Length: 409
Image (cartoon, rainbow, N blue to C red):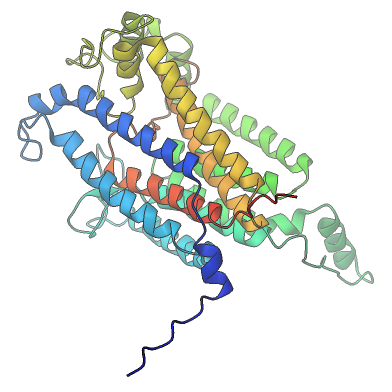
């Protein structure tokens, strides 16, 4: 019996089977590997002293969990990288709708998983399993939704209203200045940011806004809208500073952390500074940090970079920052060479989110900005967040597969 003829690949399948960007992949793997090593060094004492049923004095608890999530995340990254990224277009509204539903569930007693009274977490299986923050999904969902819509703005016809009525003339003027174009994006941001902010997750809302603004800016939206948005943001923060004691206190601690209560407010920043200062140029050596022994609060989470500097010194910390910089720059290079505008906007949104998280985390640790509670990608403990980061990297690798090869003329 004759063998069945092999099916010819469609153009879409051929494009999706191109080689992924090797430099970008290697940078992701390097940062993930270094992050796991530093997480083990920063967390083993905390885990050893934790006698809760979850940890049970196991010094390998954090790094083992993170490694398992990392392995699952790498498998997911590879699978996503094999998907033709054009499919992300129709998936974007579904993912956005799912993220809104999950954010709403954070307000439902019995389904949410509040930690320290803050209702920003859900369990993977709603009533059991590990916790995650739906805002992590919302960040990439907003980026994909905006990219899917804005990539078509150059081909869309301008709206036209009747000039016979004042309402029609007013709507034509709004369309001319670009206001009507921004309405759907503004509504999406109001819903998502509102849900995230009232979870008491201001840092998550900030990241959602950063990703959205990056995509809007690169798509060609007029600069005057960003100037106005920036002014509105400054005004809102100023109003919160005047009317909210919590925000005022946060800024006061940032401006003068040494004047705050040494055992309460400003304690985390002080201990982080001691950790950084004791590292010197070359560091104490891997695993030799003193501050992780009960001084720096939760060294495996937001403050892990202070342990990195103490153990590896300024030279080691600088090398890690170089790796992050190369990853970010390579991402933007891929965005510039993407096959179409959707690919460009998607990469810009995801890479800007990554860059913002790195900046905000290190800015807090070094005292450049007020405390935001944003973890360091690939380093801070958080399994579901790590998997989402790797999924985002998979999207970028999927887009890199379809970058046209350079011509040899």
